[in-house]
Image (tube, rainbow, N blue to C red):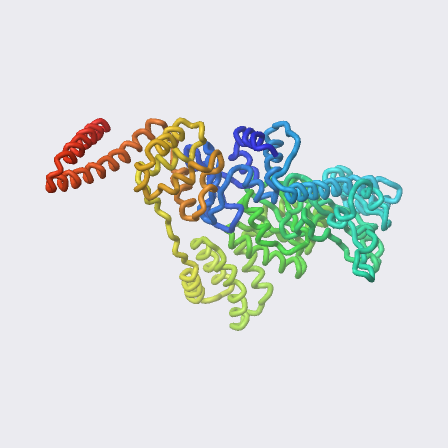
Length: 591
């Protein structure tokens, strides 16, 4: 990707708008926006975006960069892919592609092939659902209340009972290595250790595409039709998912995030269910902020992914033992990350999909609106698990609740939870208070604040050298450095200014190698209320001139006294003339 095109894209891109698609940003100054960092776990926002300078920096983990590096990290893209993605978001026509290395080109081509294969497979599965062989799948979906609108919206398809049909459809012009890497096929190892012929991984199954945040298909989950209709044990697992591939890692994806993202951000609230059918059924009732974990354990990565979009979650997992355990693990992760959590418990032990089909959309909406607050749910769960009123049961109930109480980051919420639990379980509140006091002591972290030890002159010069090379403030500071490098020598930030100057038009913070330098410069830049001006640079350079001339003046006085002591009158005359000129220069700069 040509560098001049990348620079054009960068100048036209609005980094706040693009990052805002991934991180909930709030304005925190004239030019600054803040949010929770998507690159590490945190409860208080330390991730900042500078609207004017078009860069981001996290004061927690130190990550920083421009709009391209953000997309590279958040979407796992190469630099050319990131430039293309930003260009597409800005509506900028794309030039012919080139790459920085053969490896980068190969990686990009491979990702492109895999995305194309998944799109082609999705289209083929959709065709098969409409074919005569898909009649059984259509009948099953109709029986489950899946409407034609939902089938189209979620691109549901059918994998026929064929080992080779999909391979034959996709193989034309595609190398075997890409087909194997796609996760769409399986094979058996031959006697010599080489892979055998490819055959379809998904057969006689209803297919549900899994999409990334951009809506591109990256994997599938597929329900066995035989097990659904006839209890056939040879049909394999009820649900079969794509394996891990270069495009897909199951612990890093939330089903339906591409469709639900806008509603979640608008409401600051997400509804979390366990499976794809639950998600589809709830979504089609009009609840568009619903996501599914795809039957996998909720991961820390998924929590951080969700945290970019909202701070409130309602959990509605299946009511069986496995579902209740999964709900508790999810609740634990969400609570630790500061989410406000509620729990939906449906009547008669129904899962969301069945509840919607049997009771209707209105009933589900009512259940969602009356979700239990997390403390109430956990206390009720403790009473169900340990129904006896014996001292032993109370100890077990207390031990069950304490980890959940300790996870709550808010002191007031912990105290209210503890008081409520003590009352409803007839537990001595003093015991709970002592346990919480000890837990609070352990939770206190010493938060070190990095104070910026720069004076006003240094801050102005940092801001000037952090500007773009065609900025008047940058040009004035750079000219002074070229013309009079000696006036910068005694500055503690001399090497830092040199690094900023040598970076060209790149991100100023990312150009620095030392973590502390990056943090301190980021603090200076995010503290500015408006761009640095030429007058400010001129004013900042004056004390540097004065300090340098004063230092020379002191040296001249010492040299002059020594020359007089030795009787070297020619040297005295030369030094006196130099001192007169120096005194005039000091008067001219106003000191």
